[in-house]
Image 1 (cartoon, rainbow, N blue to C red):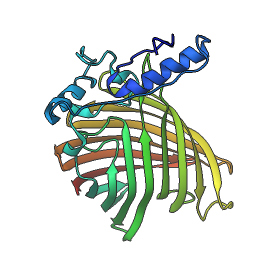
Image 2: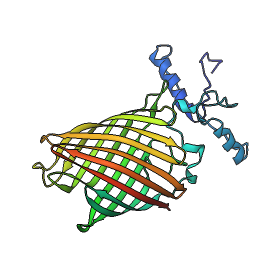
Image 3: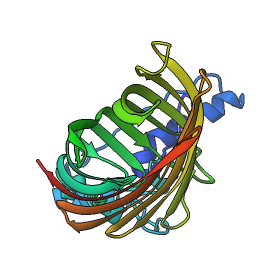
Length: 307
């Protein structure tokens, strides 16, 4: 290409090389420096052993508190990549993908016991080794609750619960977002099972082990108390995650105002301690409020993960 007077540039940035090359081409075209740009990439790791290639790739990973200079990577991938996995551990070192849990607690003045099962995979407070901080993927989560005053009932059936809190910094401004849907018990004239779909987007940041976030959200709900088949509502959520080794903390508050003039909000403080790779102990206090009343719930839960 040099003989044809066509400029070329070599970009190296570990796992971010492709994105950096595409960004440079975009800037060159948008700035009017060139009319057409071709971006290509290749990687060859077969001339070294598996351990040597793994070590070389690891040199490009973000370290705690920043990225040290790496001999083969000119640009740290952390500038454009999602949050790192805690402890710099591979995903296979994390907990099992399925989970069962047993809990005891109190709602108002009523004691209860709970059994939960989740098909997959990980929530914001689960044992964090091997998983990205601020990431959640849950599918098919079932909770059955038995109280002193009643027979066992379905408390929650979460079909999907995905959250991605990628922190913003001076280089990258990613969108944090979430989507959840299924059945849950909520206040609508009384505590009843409601069907819902909700989601939202916003931003999160990281300051050491602290990760605050702020989201705008919308919710569509169906229950036997509301006159409409589907009642929409809008609101928001604000919270703080704190990661400290075996400890994971979350403080959050969220509320929605519906088109039928119903308002509902929930605030929660939860903490989990990783007893081992496959076991966790979680405690949480949750307060649900609505126009004219509120309830407070406390729960202590043991969680076991397995494949």
